[in-house]
Amino acid sequence: MVYPPAGNGPYRLLRGFNAGAVRAFETSCAAPEAAQRTRLDVLLAGLRGTAFASDHGLTGAEDLDAWRAKVPIRTHAEQVGWLDRVAAGEADVLTRAPVRSLLETSGTTGRPKWLPVTAPWARTVADAQALWVLALLRDDEGLAKGKALSVVSPAEHMRSPGGLAVGSNTGRMFQAQPWWVRWRAPVPYAVYCVEDPTLRAYCVLRHALGQPVTSWTTANPSTLLLYCRRLVEWWEDLAADAHDGTLCRGPAAALTPKLRAALGGGPFGGLGRVRLGAEPLPAKIWNLRRVNCWMGGSAPFFLSRLPRALGAEIPVREVGVTASEGFFAIPVDDDASVAWLGGHLLEFVGDDGGPRMAWEVEVGREYRLVVSTEAGLYRYDLGDIVRIVGWCEGAPRMVFVRKAGNVLNAMGEKVTEDQVVTAARAAFPEAVGVSVSIGWGEIPVLRVAVEGDAAHPSSGDALERFDRSLRGSNVEYDGRRASGRMGLPTALWVGTGAFAAWREARVRAGAPDAQVKDPIVLDSDKWDALVTPGASR
Image (cartoon, rainbow, N blue to C red; front, side, top):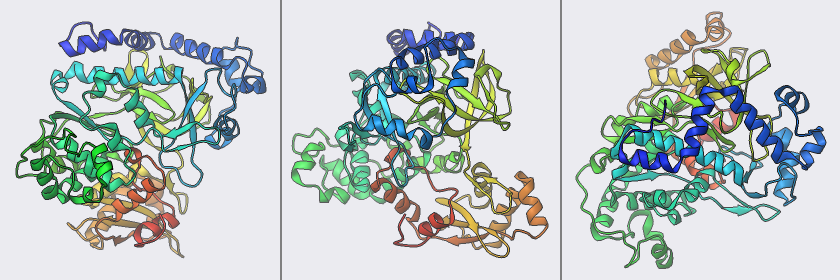
């Protein structure tokens, strides 16, 4: 049993509040086929009378085979017609349940991707979030004795043509938490709504420094590293503000008196006075017991740098296989996440293009994740590649590997992002950031942009280690290198702050701060923009 009735006090209390979610999870692991059939019935009930049901001839009596036959797998671009109608305010397009708001996906370039939020979908995601927190408390009662620091983005930053709020899922989830969970947050929500990302980071740190933080959560581990670097950069100003109980130094000097008061920095703001130690290291400032973030895909490159940046080896737990579209696999321990079969309808598409249900997958194989949710995404191709690594009773355990199609492919070698990350860790262990693109020419090469002063990337040894790692993990790349069809990678050192500037440009363009992914694999134009100061990002 993943969530036994016995345990520490905070765990038992939270388990009681979420007894329904616990039952749904335990049942879905014991009887995955029945759980997924139930999810299909819920989806069909929510579809009754909608434009989507009419367009696809859905009667509500479909089984899984009929569902697959009537509803094709589609990407976001192929579903955008229905989604545009939702954004325009039209009712009963994808769901009978009213659409409350729209989520803007992370990593958006060009036209934003907007995803609907309905009350049933929000409850399903909240259940998954509660189960994740419950497992943390089950394993460490001490987490409940301090504050839970999160880095989130605003739940609303604009309105759709139909008047629906558009914003970040992290901010939406933050606001949807029960009051007693929000009380544990050391940073008020108003701080996360500060538009300027640099000012926002300063205000987040200023609030958190005066609180007994025991856990730190954000989607991307590179966000944690960025905040650690900012802590060092602003240490004198933050320490002085903390000593005086103010919010007026560093980037906060630009605040108007009205905004400063709104952010808790006025005479009655309650920031309080605190004397900080001599070291700007989170593990020295707080009794930090746990860090929570993504651990798959490109994350290992950044995770290996966390102990030094934090000042200690802090246990890290995965935040799950999640996206703005939903919560698909829950971390219930320090092993791989378990498919949330009591929440969404999940399908796994293999290399042969055939979809499989959760009980049909094989350990060791990789699949593209296709999801159907109560928010109106039906057989939606998430574009995420996951690897099945084990089982929790009848539910598969999975890890995120990469985005589908996110590969370097000059001559059929298909170098994947996770292969690049492994090579970068071997070649540039002290780098702040690494990004790779194809350098086109008579003999193509991989171009590597590196930020970090510890070792200049033009070093032949570093490039040879990078090349050797890729050749060892990708037989096609090795063959093209051996035949001379591809040359030895080249490298370019980029100035300090280049990756932070890339990140801030993405945030200013509307991408959620907490979810911006670092540019590990880029096309040539985006790579040129990264390495060229002042270029458009």
